Length: 317
Image 1 (cartoon, helix red, strand yellow):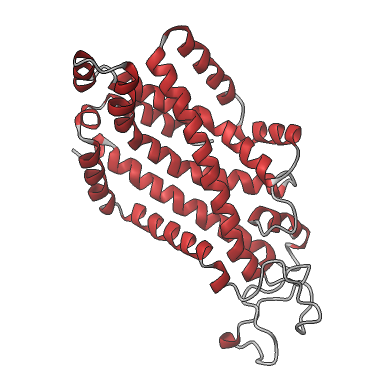
Image 2 (cartoon, rainbow, N blue to C red):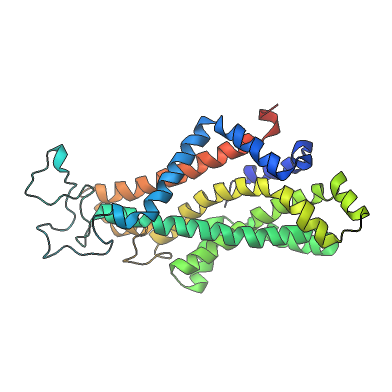
């Protein structure tokens, strides 16, 4: 789950007059200009774009298919150390820049293809949570009354549980697997998006331009979809960016516990789990998947923090 302080800050940002009165297009241009001035945010953007390109171009970058067993094809054994010819590795040995795993598969290829699995899971999880959470928050904020109370109390109950423990419980009921892990992580992420959307809707629906639309005969649905939600998107984008990092980290945790991706899927958490008992004899097989997870989470967190800073009125006066 996304940090609760971030959710609180984004809820409070709904009351900022600058965010509520600007045209959405001009608001995005202003945010982009501020974001370019955040060095950490730009570093995060470079990392994220590099990871996305790596995932898209995996067949061109990876020297082997991710699940290809090299026994009988090359003179290599299980858990071979990294071999890079330009760094002094003998030319007569096959080059594997991250070594081979316990099943004699190229570790570098599996790391590259693992970016596809982790990024796909992160994006799909956040998309699902964003759609459902935004719908719940918009309905609660726009309808008010008993419906608002019921929906928000349900969200509060979900928020009351540690997100990873709740995800573990959900997967335990649904059964292990990448798809069920995606569903579980999405469920525990929904309340954050619902709360931020509700806070935005409650503030924006009382703004002058929303009131003017109602006075001109616009229906509540038209006011919500044409005036309120377009101006509520910006903080949700920040939350979603940070949410991708959280989703990838939690998915790796579930896979490490055997509840997420199952072998031989090249998922970083699964790769860590399969070699956790060889951390001292073959440390590279633990180091490289861990490094991939760390860089991915760092990239999205830096980019999300940069967006948050660009949208924070107290930092841009």
